[in-house]
Length: 384
Image 1: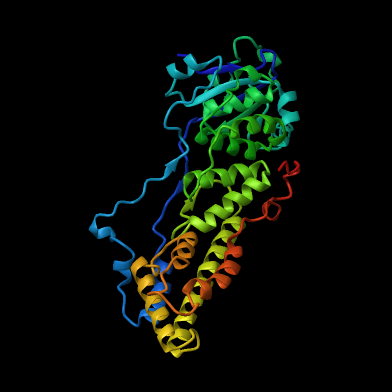
Image 2: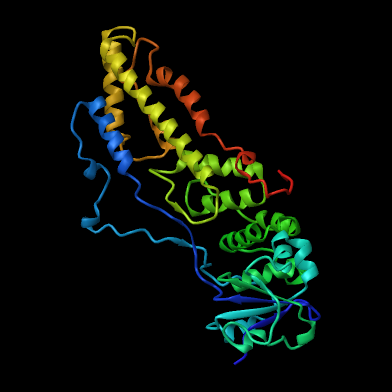
C-alpha cells in the first residue's frame, strides 16, 4: 500500500516527509490549584471570623472521596473538519501510516518562512540532501509520481503535526487558495497557529486568519477557549484581542490557570498570576481592615451603625464562602452587592465604604500589553 502523498507543486524540488503525524496534544488542563489558596484563606477566615476552618473541607471533595482527575482539553477536533484537498481518500485509506510526503516548492517555502529558508540552507537537522537510502527505508526517498528523482534538490522532515492542518498551511504558502476552507473550528485554528508560530509564516497567513476569526464568538469566562484566543492573538499580534483575553483570564479564573500546553512565554503566565493574586490580596486586606475598623468603631457614624455593618459584612462573606478559591470577578461582584442591614437612618453602606478601593484595585487586573511579551524574532507589524 502506498504512503499518502500530496503534490502541491508537480515540478517542486523539495520533498517534505511528515513522520508520525496526527499526534494528539492538549491545549489546556484545568487543575485544582487550591493548596496556596487554602493556606492563605485559612488565615483570612481565622482573622475575619475568629474560628478554625478545615482547609480540606473548604477546598471541596478530596481525591479519596471519588474526585476524578480532569481530562485535558485536546487540540484534536471533536469532528473531522471539512478541509478540501486533493488527497483525502489517500489519507483515509492510510490512516495508520506513520509518514506523509509532500512535494513542495523551495522558492515558496523560503519566501514564506525564515525557518524553512534556514532548513533549505542545510543548517537544521530537519533538512538533508536527497540520497539513495533513507534512515529507515528506501521508500522514504521514493519520488512522487509526477516528479523525478533528479528534480528533488531538498528533503525536509517534520514530526507529529496534524497532516490535514499541515496540508492546509502548505496550500496557503503555495497559493492554492481554492483548497483552503472559508471557516474552521477553534481547535483547527489553534493547530494552525502552532504551525504558523513554529515556522514564523505570519505574513503569508495573516489574511486567511483575519477571515477565519470573524466567524467566532469570543468566550465570556476563563477556560480552554480563552487560552486558545490568548495564543492566537499572541501569535498574530492582535493587541486588542490579546488585552481582552488576558483580562478575561485574570478576572474569571478560579484558583489558578491550570496547565497550559501551548508555547506561550512563561513571563506572560507569571504576569497574569501575579496580577490576579495581587488584586485578591488587596481585596481581602481591605475587607479585613474594614472589619477591624468597624469593630473598633473607627468606621460608621455610631455604635449601632458600626455593629450592623460589621454583622452584615461577616455574615455575607461567610454565606458566599469568599475564603475559598474563587475568581476576582466573583469576589468583586459579591462584596459590592452585600446588604448593609436593615433600613438605615444614616448614609453609611458597605458599598460606599468598599467601592473606592475596589475600583482602584480592579485596574490591576486589566488586560496586558502585547508588546511586553513579544520576542525579538517576531518582526511583523501589530495589526490591531
